[in-house]
Length: 156
Image 1 (spheres, helix red, strand yellow):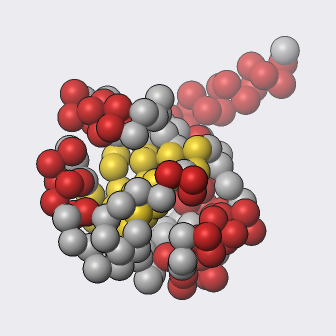
Image 2 (cartoon, helix red, strand yellow):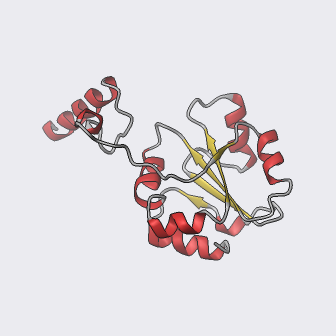
């Protein structure tokens, strides 16, 4: 119980002091600390119309990543999977779309419903003609090794 209370206090302190990473709630307080970044060119889609426009004629494979600031597994995907150099190299061959559903707005809920997703994290793949590759959906966290196999199946 004491350990759980201490952990909760650290998470609370991190959140109230401006931290945004539940995996390292106090990391933003360390001097010279640079946040982890995927450095990949994700294009934001805010609603179904923007998604449909992006999928109308992509000309290359498409990956749509559902993300939210409060989603711990999303942060894990960014830190441990999307930051892997091999994964980044392979993902750079695709049109990368990100649906940030942090606010849970009506448009964001509609995007989730479009793919029958309860919430993030979720990754949906499409071929170069914009058709979904249903068998390749990723729900939840995948290690870089496992995600690499998914990318291979998607042709990346």
